[in-house]
Structures are given as C-alpha cells and as structure tokens.
Length: 519
Image (tube, rainbow, N blue to C red; front, side, top):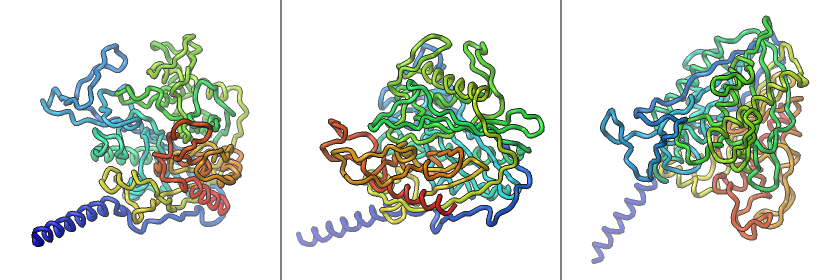
C-alpha cells in the first residue's frame, strides 16, 4: 500500500513539474533582454526638408466560405456549438474569430475592408513611422517582431509606432476571443498577414514621401449623442485633434490624422461581419465623400485618412447612444450598420466643417524629436496570469508578475504625440480624477496633474493602444472590487477584470511624467 502511494505521489510530482514547465514555457520572454531607451536626434540639428508619406494596405482575411451579404435582409444566425461547413472543402469551417465582447463569434462575411494605415514623418535627420491597424489590439512582443522584420527590409526608418483602432468586429490578434474560453482566437497565418502588410504599408509610405507642410487643428468637443461614458465620473476624450498634411508644391491634401476617444463597437455583439465599424464610414467619407445610395451628399477631401484612438477606458462607447442622422432625419439607437454609418458621417462632417471654417496653425519645415522607452508594469490580475500560463495570451512575462511595455513621445513642431499602451481612462489624460466614497484605495489621487496638462505642445495628441494592449489603465482611487461600491453602485464596475491591477494607473503615470521631464 505504501509503495502504491509512493508511486502515486511521485507521479503527481512529475505531473505538477510538467504543468509548471508548460506554464513557464508559455510565459517565457519572447524577446529576452529587449530594452528601448531611444532619444532622437542625438543632438540639436536643423530640419533639411520636411517630408510626409502616407499609404495603406488591406489586412482583410480571405474567408473560405460563402455567406449572405451583410446589407441584405437574409442573415445566418449560428448557434453556439454549430459546425461551420465550408461548401468547397466539405469539412468544418476554419473560422476567423471576431475579437471583442465574448467568445464564439465566427466571422460569416466581410462588410468592408480593414486596413493597416501608415504615415512616415521625415525631417531629413530622422524618420518615424506610425501605423494604425484595424485591430482590437496587438501585444508588445508582436510589435517588436514587426520592427525586427522591418529592419530586414533595410528601410531607413529610425522608429516604428504601431497602434490599434480597438474595433470589435475584426479577427482576434490577442487570443481572448476564440471558440471557447480556454481556446485562443488567434490564427497564426492571419497574424503573419498583419505583420507583412504592416511592413508593406510602411514601405509604401516611405517611398510616397514628398515635401509637405502640416496644418494643426482641434475640435474642442463632439456632440453628446456620439459617445457615452459607461462609468462615473463622466469624463470624455471627445475633442478631435487634427493633423492635416498638404503637398508643399500643389497645396493638395495628402492625408489627415485624427485623434479621438471612443470604442468602435456601434454594431454590438450580435454582428458577425468583419467591419471597421464607424471608423470605416468616417475615413471613407473623408476620402471619397459622404454617400447615400451612391449619391454624394458632401465631397471628400481626398488623400488618406487615419484615425488613432484616444483615451477610451472607463469606458467610452457608442452603445446606448441615440445617434441622429441629419441627412435622413432619423435616430439610430439599436446596434446596426445604419448607426455606425451615421456616427462615421457625423464625425466626417465635423472635420470637413473645421477644414473650411476652423482656425488652423500651419507649420512649415518642422523638426522631429522622439523619446521612446520600455518599462515594466506590475501584474496582479490572476486571470491574466492564468491566460498566459495556458498559452491563451501569446506574450512573454517578466517572471510571473511583470509585463514589459512601452511609451513614446514624438514632437513635430508644435504638435506632441504621446503613445499609451492600453485603454487609459480620460480622467488621467484630461483631468477629473476623484476620491469617491467606497473605493478600495482611498486617499489623494496619484495621477495629478492630468497628462495633457503636463505636455508642452500647443496641440497634444494622446494615442491609446499603441505598441501594446495591456487593458484598462484607471486611477488607483477609482479601483473598486469590494463593496460598498463607489457612486452607490449595486455591483462591481466593468474594467477591473480587464486591467493589470490597481498599480497600472500609477505606474503608467510615473513613467509618462519622467518621459516628459526628460524631453
């Protein structure tokens, strides 16, 4: 009997050792020793000739099946556990799993293409590329991999920034939204496609560079029906910061960069068509015009439009908004393509109005300055740790309790662009951090003064989900998982479950503060 127990005990130890080995393998550092502490240019230099290039490449997957058209009345409504049959292969449909909301959302068609949109800034001394993906997010390890692949291209790009629009109707690039809770939704061939197309977009933007000047603008606020705050206190990031690129010789539009804070999820969780949500309608309207039934209601501005999301933690969303369409005289509250279209067209119209009537600051021959650095977040979220250990997250940890991430600060003349590696609450960026009764960590707010007040540009862009996606970054004094809940809430607020922990906000704020001080 003792011998049997000894063998059983030994087998248990072997099993535990095997489980631990697998977990350690899954959370291994994908890029051991990687650090970044970049300061460009190394010394003060004059701009030789400022140039800008823009390009875009499709990252739409090719679906192997034939589903109904997204705009028709016929809809395929899969039930959980359905076998998705490919008519050509006579086998199980190898699904692309849509990111956001919940698991088991297989893509059943493509409503509109999704993109990697790139800008290359070149002042003759340094070249910085910014790419925005129609993706829910991309991990820092994948950003490093893309940078390494870009280096193999031998393009003279000094630094690459990759951000995500955080759209909730595109293929999963992070792993959380597969067929089942414990199954990754990432298809390796699709991740490779995104990597390759990102590099091609940067390459095309580099070769498209031409002498240019920039017009900087800002729309102070958008209408109340376009974005809602899902959690008190009610603080938004609803100003639209604008960077309009014009050809120096012809004065024609090369493109426009827009920075605004809202979740692209106007279609809700029931939609199973790949789409860029309101981002598609916004950017298409600016490039080609506002259209209804092929009728042009308003002419576009041409060029390539790029939307970089802002401070969307808290969370900023169109869900529940009753969006008004002034061209059709209708309201849209339900989660439909009509609502996404109306939201995008309204945003485009605001930008068009600003281009005609607004006050713009024109900058000729600006010089570039860039500081970029890695740092480590403390990781307290046990669910994230488990997700890493079982391979659901394909990213490395530092030990079992820290994550490497990154922030960047780029100045282009009077414009400052700060990158944030997640979904930061607008209170940290724009002000409004409180010490609500019932919070788990009462006391004076740590994240003060707000980040935009620390920044020294005349136009301060804050781009979220850049170079990483670590989840929600909230003020520590707002952290609330234990009753009594703040603002007389009856249950815990959404956000903490998708956050690294209560120290994410203070850690990020300290790192940003140091970066700005050094700039």
